[in-house]
Image 1 (tube, helix red, strand yellow):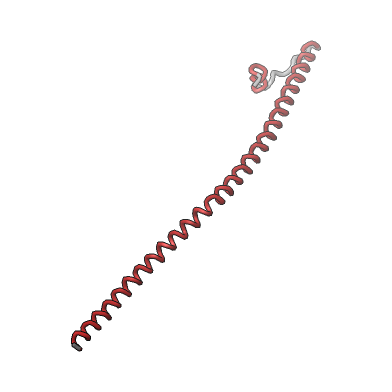
Image 2 (cartoon, helix red, strand yellow):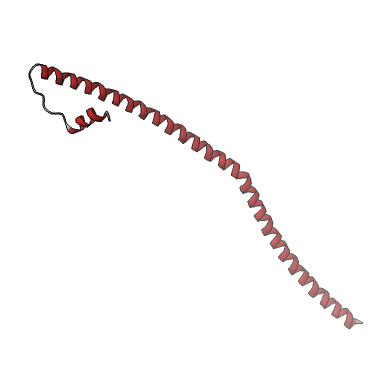
Length: 119
């Protein structure tokens, strides 16, 4: 009987070692799976906040660009008005010179083009 008790004890010990190894392996895999799940959950929770931050940056950029475009349009309109006024003035002076018998210099080609096309 002692032989059988020794064999049973040896197999029991070996079984405990194998069971411990499987348990350690399962625990390690469970810990890795838990870590992955925790990381995925953290990313899901951070995503809306990141999207909100991205949206606020985009909105601020759009507002800034709209403001700059408005300012540029105002400047361009003002410059076009100034160019038109100067063109009318130069045309008036040219007619005055012609009536007075003074032949004015021919205008610059860009001025000719503007007078012809308005652009």
